[in-house]
Image 1 (cartoon, rainbow, N blue to C red):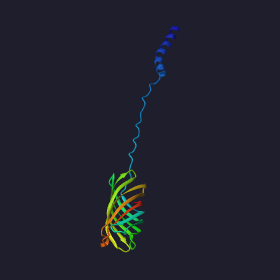
Image 2: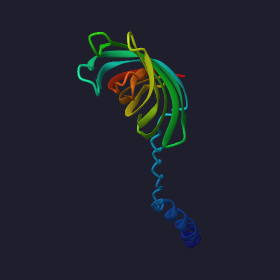
Image 3: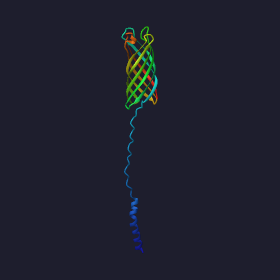
Image 4: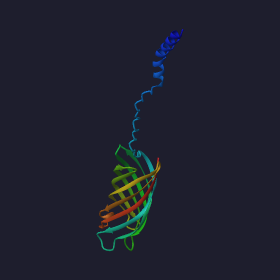
Length: 197
């Protein structure tokens, strides 16, 4: 009877021993899982395609080939146009109409300047560096008006989705102003603000 009991205990130990030993073993560690780092989105620049309208104000300096025909003073007006975004480059067309009160001689005063302009520029972040040129018409109170041309450069920066500010430097040329024999030139430097849509 004792032998049978010992035999039963030994058999049970041999059968359950590996199972119990297995249950006490430390499970193997799982290999760490590495999550890929999220790829940062490439910085985007604003889309300049669309129309705009706004205003500008600044300084104008008028000179000529004739002694005593020159002057300087404030100038400013309204602007409007349309730009098209080609990716890194932007091209557009616009119109400016400036009011002025610049005495260029004892009897002549520059009253307004109209410009029809083309511009092309390169995008830098939120900004646009551009060159511009086109047709200009200057009107005076006593010398009449005359057609000419202008060329210059500027920078415009988008502050919000629909508002931008900038600055523009232009050189104007009016040869033989209204057949007077006087060649007029004018340089303007203006700050611009535009609402874009």
